[in-house]
Amino acid sequence: MLLNLISASLLAVPALALPHTGLGVSKRQDCPAPGQAAGATELPDPFTNSAGTPITTAAEFTCRQQELFQLFQDSELGEKPGAPESVTASASGNGLTINVSNGGSSISFSVSISYPSGGSEPYPAIIAYGFPSIPVPAGVATITFNNDDIAAQQNTGSRGRGKFYDLYGSDHTASAMTAWAWGVSRIIDALEATPNARINPERIGVTGCSRNGKGAFIAGAFDERVALTLPQESGSGGSACWRLSDEQKRQGQNVQTASQIITENVWFSRAFEQYVNDVTQLPVDHHELAALVAPRGLYVIENTDMEWLGNWSCYGCMVAGHKIYEALGVPDNMGFSQVGGHNHCQFPGAQNEELNAFITKFLLDGDANTAVMRTDGNLQFDEAQWCPWEVPTLA
Image (tube, helix red, strand yellow):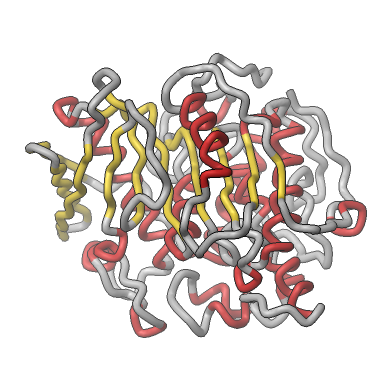
C-alpha cells in the first residue's frame, strides 16, 4: 500500500479507496476502536495511537487518521453527522440550491457560483467561506458559501442557532465549525448529483480567512473529497497549536489562547471547555489537523505581523504538521507561508506564486513546484523540545 504521487491528483491510499461515509475519513472495519489518548506537555505524537502502539505502515496510518477524527470530535469540535437521509439539488444560472432532509426535518440553503471566463467544463472550484479573500486564478470557479446561515457565529449566545441546528436540534454537540464542515460536505454531495452545475466535484478546494480560515481548515480535515485546503490567517483554533499558543502567552505576548477563545464565540464544542485551562490534557493538537488532511493538498497562509493569531505558534505547529507529510513521502503536498507587512486578510503579492502553484497542482492537474515552508519572521522553533517523537517512513 504505497503512497504514490499520481500527477496532480489525489493520492491513492487505503482510506480513499473505501466507500465514503459522509463523515471525515472513510471507515476501515479492521481498525481498532478509537481510544482516549492521554495528554502531553509536548505536541502529541501523531505516529503513536491511543493504545501506545507506534504507526509503522501506511495502512496503520489510515487507522490513526480514523482515530484522530474521532478524538477531535470528542474533545474539541463535536460530532459531525454522517450523510443525511436525503440531499437533492438544483442548479439555475449562477446559483445552486441544496435541499437536505433527515429525521423528519428539512432545510434548504443556496450557494452562488462564479464561473471562470477561461478553462473547460466541468470546472474545478474553490468553496469560499463568506467571500474569497484570495485571488482565484483563471480556469477555476468560485463557490461562495454563507457559512453563518448554517451556524451562527455572532457571539457566545449563537450556540445552537442556524440551519444545521434546525435539522439536528439546537442541543446537538457540533460546534459552529463542525456545522460549517457539514455544510461543505453537503455542497460536494450536491455537486456530485448535479452535473449541470458544471463543476468537477473531484477538484474542490476550500478557503476562508481568520475565523472562516479556522473553519476552512476543519472542512478540509473533515471531508477527504476536498482536494486542496487553503486556510488563510486562521491562527489560534486553526493552524496554531494550543500548547504553543499557551507558551507564547507565557512569554508575555498578546496571543489568543484556548481559555480566551471560548469566551468569544461558539467555534468549539462544550466538551472543549474542560481542557482550556490546561491544554496539556488535550489528546490532540492542531498539527494533527494536517494529519487529517494528509496526503491531500494543504497550503497554509499566515501573517507574521498577527501576534494575536499566534505567529510563532502557527509556524511551529505547521512545522510539526509537515512531518506527517514527510512520513507519507509527499512533503511538497503541504506548504506553509508566513508573510507580514500587510493588513489582516489582505492577500500579499509575495504569496501569489505559491498559491497559484498549489491550485495548478491540485485543482488544474498541472505540474508546479509546491515546495514551500517559510516565514519572514525571526522565529525559532525547538523541534527537539516540542516534537520528541520519531518520524517513520510510511511511503
